[in-house]
Length: 542
Image 1 (tube, helix red, strand yellow):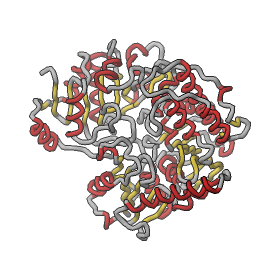
Image 2 (cartoon, rainbow, N blue to C red):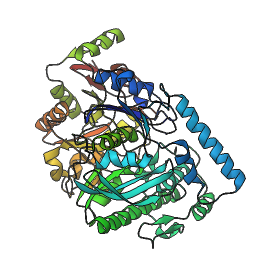
Image 3 (cartoon, helix red, strand yellow):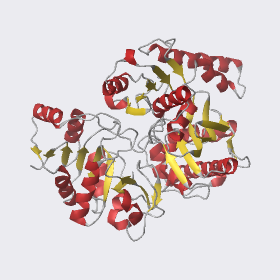
Image 4 (cartoon, rainbow, N blue to C red):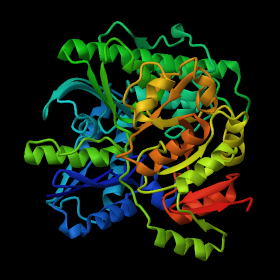
């Protein structure tokens, strides 16, 4: 049975996924192919074409097409509550229907095709985490800015059974609150929420400032009228202006409110279900700091966070949800890695290198050569194997460096990434070494959980630790990514330190690189010292 999962073009992040007989064959975001960040409001045509090619099938051979969004009216009608002035309500309906209709017109198939199923947006999010977590029974939280007719869904599941306890309205959206605060801080909403999360560590929260949140409910609620009035009272920071302490404190306050809300939700669910396992999805689940607080709270013993939790994730979730509906069983895999994108052979890579006229050498041990360069203070692009899905680079399309070197963080931020100097990086290490470098170690393959760095080890990877002494750890297993595992091994053999700095292989404003051509272009236009691509090494000082 071949199920193609797609994000609806109504969404801000689009992707495609292919499930065959309960196994995930391919999963990739449209932005990686079009080179437009997030690929908003666009049909994931190139991602779909890649998935079909990887599966060796045509669109006509697909048995089922699952779209991660409800039908038009299921999206529109819930947004009319609370009641609104007729003229405003009519305008909102008309605009939303027009946008959805435009998205439907982009389909390379008819929306009435009998193979097509429109799946509830948040059920798709939930399916992408709960059914792939490996937990037989677990609670789930799915939150985003607006997911069709609602912005969140809370409950618990056992086997394939789902028990929905609470739905969060779009008016009371936690994701929308974070987005709008991101805009106030002078960043781009729907894209730069990670900056807000990072900036929060430089501020002091003022819990009394957000008087529009009712904390007395089992699941805290946002009063959208009071929230809008509060937001209107703020003066947005102009782009490029100084980030004053006031804005840093605002970032800390919204982060604190989100963490407090999530902890209260986790408490509510653990009491309802009796389970202390938690599955997270939706755009809010990309908040590493909050996820770390959940993991180390008294309400959570085990956690699974879907690594592509933006709207891109509903492509996978819709396919998974459809599989469960058709078979009555969960898919036959656990989502324990994110390497479902394109891979390129040495022959394909060398053909591009020859055409580029850039000098290069073939290496018998590319991992050793890269580790040597890192130990010498070089910043290296790392392009190996299948591309990862989600916003975190995980050793498929990464930029790597020695995190112990003084000044390396500033070099990577300023000369390579072309981004703000205060932005943090993350550490990659062997899975078995996580406990050596952070407190409260836990399986963390996706760099989406924040841990407290061990005081006796923090200086050995200072550039990959944030100002609040937390680290977004990636634990690497040899059987999952042998090339990246070996790179860390070689670096450890040379330096005695088994942790490396890892950031995404891109520059500010661009998606993660996908193809060898993307990698060469990015390498050539930034301050990267070298590029390890397949078995080939390029150096700017050679």
